[in-house]
Amino acid sequence: MPGTSILNSKSMSFLKKYLNNAAPTGYEWTGQKIWMDYLKPYVDEFITDTYGSAVAIINPKAEYKVVIEGHADEISWYVNYISEKGLIYVVRNGGSDHQIAPSKLVNIHTKIGIVKGVFGWPAIHTRNKGKEEAPKPDNICIDCGCETKEEVEKLGVHVGCVITYPDEFHVLNKSNFVCRALDNRMGGFMIAEVARLLSENKKTLPFGLYVTNSVQEEVGLRGAEMITQTIKPNMAIITDVTHDTTTPMIDPKKEGAVKNGSGPVIAYAPAVQQKLRDLITETAEDNNIPFQRAALSRATGTDTDAFAYSNGGVPSALISLPLRYMHTTVEMVHRYDVENVIKLIYETLLNIKGRETFSYFD
Image 1: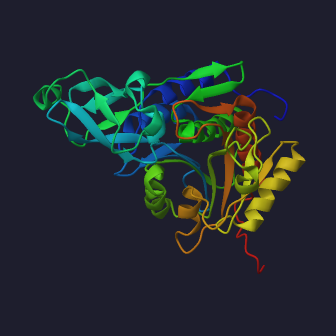
Image 2: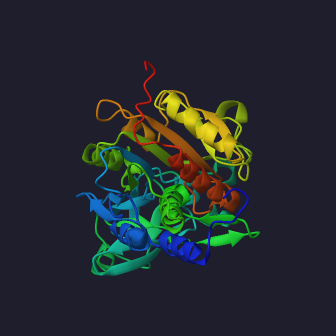
């Protein structure tokens, strides 16, 4: 597999559809349905939970259970207050960046459909150049073309409506995928591709594989906390995104040295079980899969933490996808890295015998 392109036209069609669909935290189910429909030919069965996490299972009767996991949600906003003049003020749903909001088009999700709006901002001509006020959560607001609160409410907008950006999938310079919500629907895409390859290559696994797309990671790893208790896995490999630290205004001495196009990033952190991590790095080396390393102080900040510290301790590891401009509408990843994350997870699974304890005391 190394050296070959593994993303076909069907893969790319799925990726575009999956990314362009809105799936904010707490409202992931439409994206989960797209994901499950794609995986149907490649897996044996599905389980879901009441908050929307979805698991595609290969070999469900096996006692030994291996999870590969990404998360399905994207950052967004909530309607928090509607002024008498019809302006909408917001609060975050996840780590939404207030500095990118001004001049952005938004979709306000209501029971009767999408209402369009814009994050307005005073024109440069009218601002006090000696006292430039920066965008802040308490001064950005959405204008949907209404003059009164009553007009806004007639559109179906109320406090609690979720707000997303409509920015869709693009490819820059043939190899760079750009969209909002690459964090972390790329993870859901990559683990789905692993399942596709196992099926198409007719690989039989000596364990049950639980391809898990968790919800609510952006608000504290909540979906992973729930679904790991349902699955009760023997081990877990998590994939998420991490920062390309070569971009302006990022200090690699602080954030580490990671670059788009240089391969998957294997994490070193307390939650990462060392023997499992060693299996992954050795697999990469044996299969000539390029990779980078990252050291993470204390928590990883990903669903790895939720899986690792569940069920009395689950051997867990983190393989990250380098990404530029996280939590913006122009998140960017390199196709080369996407394919190599898929290859690395795939080849690692083929090295698992289905009875490992990863104990340090054996």
